[in-house]
Image (tube, rainbow, N blue to C red):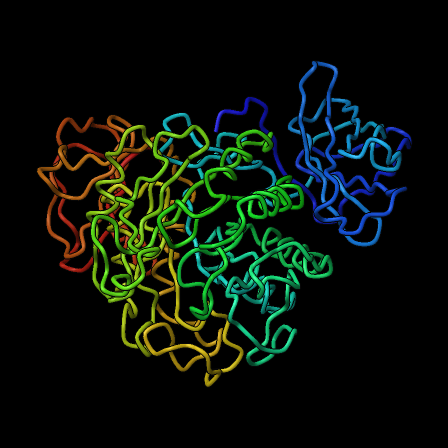
Length: 547
């Protein structure tokens, strides 16, 4: 994305700034929440009026933020200052200029330095690095995405459950969570309740009828608390608006047939509500990237996200062929080649999917890595641990998959998943999913599976390593797995130990052999030669640089 003015994040208790009040003080990284009260009546406030504000400082920097309806006659604008020394004056606008509670309201706020100790917040919102292969924060700190897939949290989990989940994932090294922002299956039924067998909260009353126009603001008020709980534990939400592939139970996802204007409106609502905080926008989920409103939502984000946080696509398993499960449904043929919209300015990353059969498949990220123009690459959906009734992708399989996807060019990061966790199953015996997608575990039991330890380990081992613009350079190691910033940083993963020789390696760098199963350093020293031999025939990570 090419917006020029970028920003940073927020504290968790927003400051309420009412119209035309005194100049307030807000920390850099802190979300300033402005409340506007409408003076007009709207049949459907969510669809009938657009509201936004423009923020300008003394240097004439400008940030544009959309507003969101929050129930009754209340609209809110969330803003975060990109610096610590500005006074920001703001002016509101509404498509209904006669509503003098929404249109033409002014205010101001002065920024000061962030004072907290949350490292995610201290380093700022996310953006793509200049080379487009990696994510960094506004401070310049490298952000290797280590993502988990608790997809159903927004509509099934309680805030207390998310707190427990977030503590576990932060401890294991994860820093991102992929979320279905709402339950996307038009055919899904069950109680309108969280933490209830067969139940789920409704974000929109009319989704089952093929639309998202009748919003339940209380759903998003609870989601606010869930998001802040994740961020408190330094986990970035990855927002997928309305799913396009299998969905939650495979019961006819709305994303394939949604009215494009409704999809764009909803993406803009998510931007308004959550875009002043660390976020990644995953605007196509598990299909071919060509569903209604996807391109238009990418263009909208390019125009409206003044903070320019990463925007991208996530594909289904097929790419250059028609899968057996799609033969009888032309809408699912999906000849996308993992590069739909590759040349669009709004597109920052592409995520492959290798399916859930328990096979290590690396050629997809290799091809995506070589696509031009360059975009960030990852395997966004390898085999989830425990798929196929608890049989596939177990234990160390997940660790090998994570490291090898990195080595093959997935330098944006890695993604992990577990059956039953992704559905957020309330009990081990909760029904509604076929065996290929599930296992007899609750979300809490699935959260403790062994593979999550190994998949999170890259986040712990590489947390202080500057991965910015690192390249796939197997050519420097006679075909052995190697990522490198030649002359300064080299990372290799040898799944069966053995030796690796690195061409043109300078002397005087630090090196260490690290056990990828527990993060323990087994040997270290200073480079004097170019050939290195692993401690034994087990998996090892070789890290060379200045530490």
